[in-house]
Length: 122
Image 1 (spheres, rainbow, N blue to C red):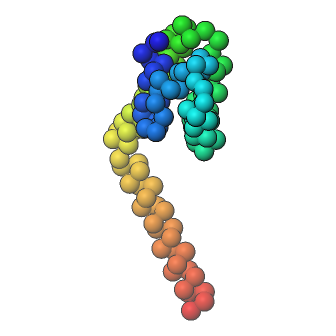
Image 2 (tube, helix red, strand yellow):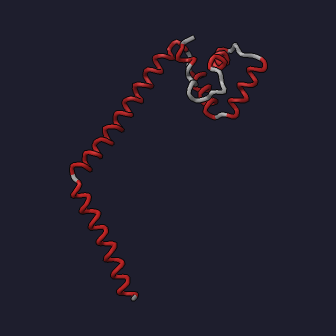
Image 3 (tube, rainbow, N blue to C red):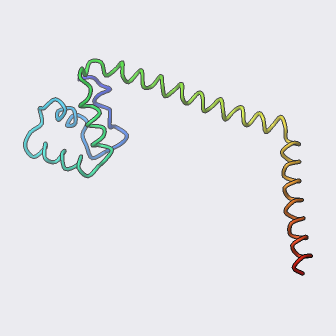
């Protein structure tokens, strides 16, 4: 059995043995172990979703390519977020006086509002 398939829930659920999960998916699990796993699935939404997703894979031999494709997409998405965050930091570093001016103007507006309100109601 593929090592990646055996480790699919390694970090998510310490109560479920990964080999037991793979036996369930291949139809080798029976008796009390089968009922115990199904009870766990009923009580754990993540486990249930994981099993349903794994059942959708028609050819377990292609699992490695699916994993690599998902990892590549995830890395690409994380890179985009990292670049956006970096751009925002650079913008803040490049234009600190602009942001300081905005803060000062907003503070002056608040002070003016409070003073005018005190004068009118005072």
